[in-house]
Image 1 (cartoon, one colour):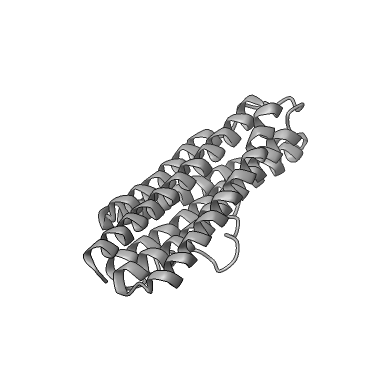
Image 2 (spheres, rainbow, N blue to C red; image 1 turned 90 degrees about the vertical axis):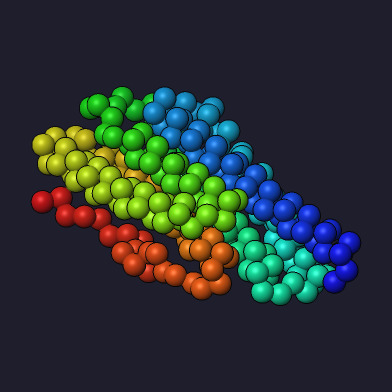
Length: 234
């Protein structure tokens, strides 16, 4: 590859990474607004999140097409190919984060006319932890920083602890007052969606690690193949 072609190829790789980061920022905003819609019982805000999913899907498709074009036309090898293949994997996880944000927004829409019967369980704190985790893996991707990757994995442990704690609180609240059962179910769905967002962020961290080192490391040893199992309420 000539110097000129190599320079142009590197520019395209940089553009690709910028596109992935832009999609990450978009789904992160979706997540933030979906939780805000839930807390404020704001239907219009929830609808906005649902509409934003179309943009996330368009970003996903555009980046996928760019990756395939780069592979077909440039025949990248080694590190460059890992950058492109990692982008393909990462946008799949980002698209799923957007989907879970929509799920939270739809839950907010369902609960818009509910009178919350007790002070809100610490869902906002868990949401902040999850958003921080997603932000950290995106920074790890942009900076190609293994330290950020490992920090993100530690952050995921905190999210798991918060999930267990909130789930247990919800179950105990229902034991004390069965009239809370309906709301507890919806809130349980929300914390489950947040926990799944964190799992997809861990997937991104794994791909970033692979992109940097050329070796795949499974950071999600504690995660089930399918959905996470609820903790005991005992």
